[in-house]
Image (cartoon, rainbow, N blue to C red; front, side, top):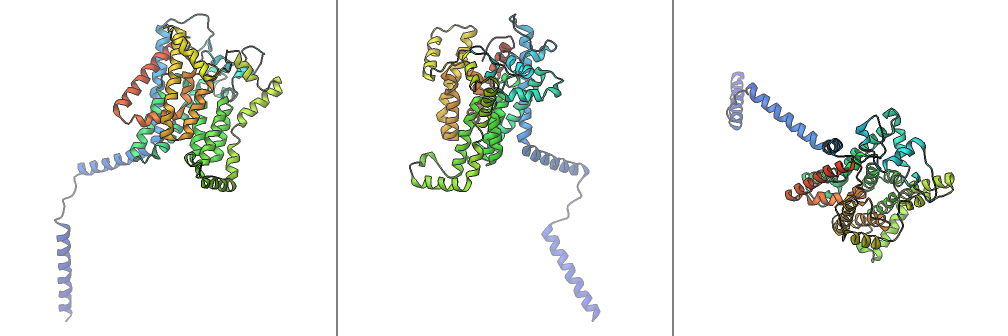
Amino acid sequence: MYAARAARWWVRGATARWKATRRRGPARPACSPASSARRRSSSMNSKLRIEAARLDWLLYPALIFAASRLLVFAAGLVGDAFLPTEAGHWVADPNSPFLSLWAKWDSQWYIQIVREGYWFQPLQQSNVAFFPLYPLVTRLALPLAGGNAVLAGFLVSNLALFGALIFLYKLAELELGERACPERSRRDGARRTIAYLAFFPTAFFFSCVYTESLFLLLSVACIYWARRRWWLAAAVAGMLAAATRNLGVVLWALATWEWLRCQGWQLAQAHRREMWRALWAGVKARWPEALLLAAIPLGLLLYIVFLKFNFDRPLAFVEAQAAWGRQQIGPVAVLAREFAALADFQLNKSGLSRLLNVGAIVAALALVPFIWRRLGEGYALYVLILVLVPISSAAMSVIRYVLTLFPVFIVLGGWGRRPVVDRMLLAAGAVGLGVLTTIFVNWIFVA
């Protein structure tokens, strides 16, 4: 009996093994060492690609930063070596010709503030016209630069540019993602955005002892954090931006607009009573967030208080700017004056600067409707204000101011999905950047 039972168990087991073999198919030969190595290599490459995509927000800005600065520094050295330099200009650092290339024109005012502090002389050009945060950060960086104010400013500007590229990448990815783009398309749009900015024809100012890099970093960080609903961080960044430039206070309007949008309020539906009821409910529930954003103008107000206590002139920076010929006559009058001057255009230093500035004004204003349609009315109004306010007194330096109009570059990043447009924008920007850098380092005024 036991033998029969054992035989039945053996038959069942053999049958089960035979069926399993049929399902699996014939036994596969053992892999060769070479194929195993290829499989492991392929798996490792796949993991590296996934990790690189995850860190693209850091790696690609680093690549663009390095490539654009290499072009800027090479163009500056070539221009300094082979083009004649006008005599009679001050030298920022006699011990470092390279650093002196990036400290021209208004840089002397920031360096003077770092070394000597503020002073004010009525009806004369005074350094109170320049806001305090950039000189303050530069002064804090002096120990890292061995006490060299020019080197400290150079480091602050370039590090701020790298940070600005990172934040702009993340903001562009967020904004372009709202258009239901695939992840790869979002990432490509963010890449193009920072590339167009870093290779913009006047992007050499990002490496100079100027405020452009720091102001751009704080502005983009403020709006990025507002978009992520980190209101405290947005308020701090906006307040610091307002202490870097007076137009930083406009960030309060843009950040508040984003807060209103988060409460469900829309400009297109402003005529509906339900919109205002929803807004009132949001104000009652989330008023501390709105109160935080109200701290953004404090950057400007604190500087006004400083001027009041030190010079008894709370608006001394406005008086000092008038010494540069900036008098409020309105943007229409300024544009009419500039176009009239272009009618008698001559290819010289002043003519080139005027042509660049007028072109920048026209291009920025022409892009406002596209920004409205692509990114919303908040960004469009922000760009409009940051263009119209400076040209209410003069068109000078607008080609430099447009560097901080980050919504413009986000829109261009969206347009660049067409290869022809992408190549055209990058090529034109890189050529213009190289040419204007060589001009700037030889004391020819650009902006």
